[in-house]
Amino acid sequence: MQTQIQQAVSQISHVILGKEQEIKLALTCLVAGGHLLIEDLPGMGKTTLSNALATVFGLGFSRIQFTSDLLPADMLGVNIFDSQRQAFSFHPGPLFQQVVLADEINRASPKTQSALLEAMEEHQVSLDGETHELPSPFFVIGTQNPQHQAGTYPLPESQLDRFLMRIQLGYPNWQAEKDMLKQPRQKDVRPLSPVISPAALLELQQHLDEVHASDSIIDYILRLVTFSRESEHFPNALSPRASKALLQSARSWAMIDDRDYLIPEDVQAVLPAVAEHRLRSTLTDHPTQTSLSQLLLEQVDPLAA
Image (cartoon, rainbow, N blue to C red; front, top):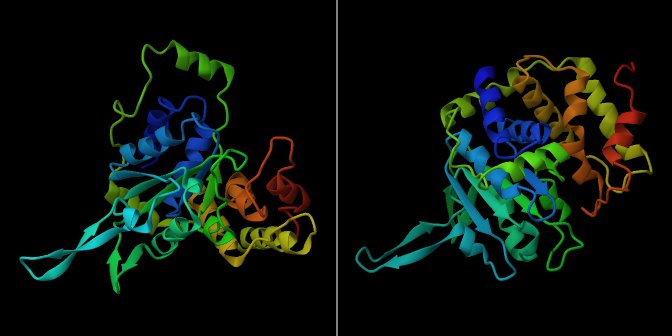
């Protein structure tokens, strides 16, 4: 399985150049069974990365373009009356796929954004008194533009907390962008092929709890979240859900590194992606602002008793 994971990273790296760390974090989120938020400027490869993740895992993929006039029914589906059967039948919307790209999620109204909450948390949707199960695995990738851009609505903290991790792709380095410009045509995900089956992915997710977390690692996580609650440096403290997310993501990172036990470096590797969007009251990050997750890592000693 380790070879297949490396193949997945390698394949995606052919369409998202110079971003191996971000690709590995995205894979970590998928294996951990969470949902991923990608925040960046337009044209950075958010959609390409999302499509590539679905392709290398052989998962069904749908894209929902969020706009100000998008309605919940446009995502969830509708009940339509069947005159022959004299009954209503449910017609599922694009949300009923294994990987759902909620593109520019912060351009939709709060009402439409909130329609995703049940799906992301319970892996089901309720419509007209009936509950409909979503496919398994179910992975939502939300992309959003920075809030200073026109036509955006800030995601409420309750929805931000549903995203296990948030990453930013950022500009490529000089060599990566040069390689991109030298390509004869813009690459897309068509050359990619599945390297890990959906069944294998589900098996990875089911064995995630078998990655051993010692008491010292759990104490380290608790010291991190406790410091965020007691210090005045953080607009929002980390909740118990964030504690679980940090442990879950660290286990997934270790599994991708082919280890069945956690070390402090696993927690440190995933903390910015897991904690940064929870620690801030809004996602108005600016390159000159101090990373709150980095401040947290600097203040908490992993070796403390």
